[in-house]
Image (cartoon, rainbow over all chains, first blue to last red; front, side):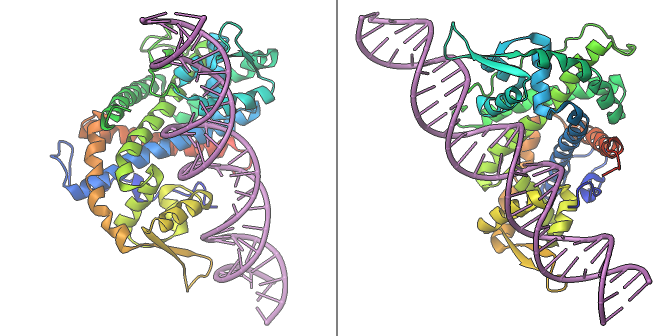
Length: 178
Length: 178
DNA sequence: CACAATTCAGTTGTGCACAATTGAATGGCT
DNA sequence: AGCCATTCAATTGTGCACAACTGAATTGTG
């Protein structure tokens, strides 16, 4: 249903109260401001996901699957654990995802002989071959953003800084640090 | 498993090739750059989600449920359709989410008498009361970001611009516009 | 008025994110 | 050698995102 209808008040710039060097907003306005920020990030993430979905459909990959393939194309074979560290994903997400990639013939999973606990993930020929058409993906994504290279790089830096701060904050919020 | 382990190469700043006013990277480097950017956004979104998860646990809300409540607190009762427009979510996501909010006693869903197709969503007393403790959430989130108000506002603007460009690009990518 | 197109909420099915748990394998320690 | 804590992949269960579809109600048009 109403997919792709246009955003409501949330993304406009309401909250008359605080101009640019504003003092702390009231508690009431905090709630509004918060709505805007968390909504914006949520929306941006889903919008990006949507563009990738459309563009990756030709390759038969989802967005997280593409992330996995990017790592494997660049770094070669690797145990599940290490893949999870690169992508910050745990086995609960990776295990079924990798099975689907295996079912698609892009990847093989074999238990390591050295350490029977770990599973090596490696590309099949087909998986390696998929890198070729995938080379054309980034340019299309780049164009879809409407940002230039410097803007994108800048955005990436902010996001990374945000992620790293948020991660440590999440740890501190947890009694016992998790 | 390895949840909260630290990011691999992806979030560092590799790609030696292109300095700041760089010309277009090679196809190879496009792939690497893309990996960094899409990974960064993905990671930021999940990191934000993680902080909200921790902070909202006290209220018994998930992040998307909190977004729904924010809209209802600010705008009052509203049909599902309109809620979906504000949040850019469709009924496939909202229907079960609203049922869970109803089961939690925060919301009531009643079919409109004027138009029997639509369902009015309104807060219960309990739902209204939850606004009170929720007022303290935004400040904690704000602190967790490590950004100041202006930085956050700036980031929000960039993300909104990105979202709106990505949305129109997604439409154009689809043969027939969808 | 009648009928076709549209609008709406809901359902089903697939895939991802994350918490919690399981069970096997490993490595350190005595 | 024997034992224990740790490390690993996998599984289970909950919740969200989205596509595709269903079926009911409504609206527009002839």
